[in-house]
Image 1 (tube, helix red, strand yellow):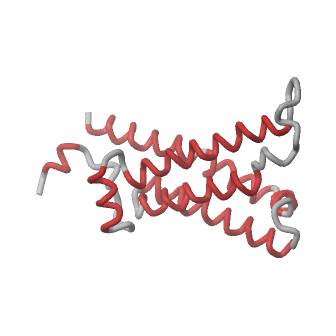
Image 2 (image 1 turned 180 degrees about the vertical axis):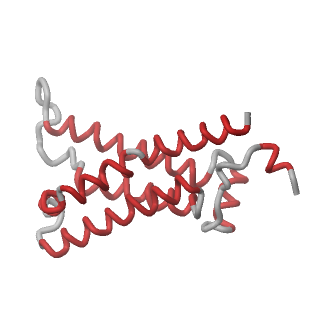
Length: 160
């Protein structure tokens, strides 16, 4: 039963980071110039756009690994939650196209759903960060770099 519990815990965390690791990170690596071009939609400078992509790549790889391994997983999830929020605000600007209320499909409504998905994903990362109760929020605030020990079973946690 303990092995099954650990597998489920890992699978849940994998589903949470799967968008970033491997897919988005791999896309940035394989299509680096295209990613930089897309980043230039948010910042005009090619140098700044390149820096944004490199920072994003770092966040997507290392914070995802933190969430998966349980090493400083709460801090890593907190960074990923912020990353989701920032990317929603920079690249999912549904208010800009001006066709939100147009009949049929519109660019703005497509961006709106992507915007909401980013914030929903941020909520999932915040659950890893803070847990689901006041005591776990206090625990994070007391030691934000501590691991949540996601792969300890109830039996292992009961031992001193």
